[in-house]
Length: 95
Image (cartoon, rainbow, N blue to C red; front, top):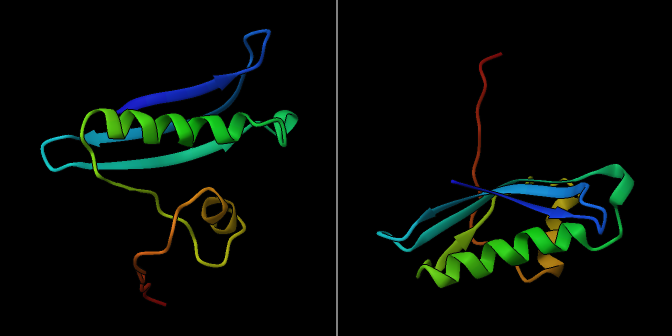
């Protein structure tokens, strides 16, 4: 697992996320992407997944993915950055 972060010019961490790499299977997962509210709209959030994708490609991970809630706003943000829906999961809870 690699922790990735994008910082401002003065060194403040503005966005971050986790990258899980498994070169043996060629798989990489991006998780827990967050941008600090004070830095929304400044491009720091774009830097983290872009870096994750480059690092995954560099080690031979051809399958790169993240998980997003179908009804939550980040899904559209990810799609605008080139991610596409490839499947769905369902969760059942006991009432």
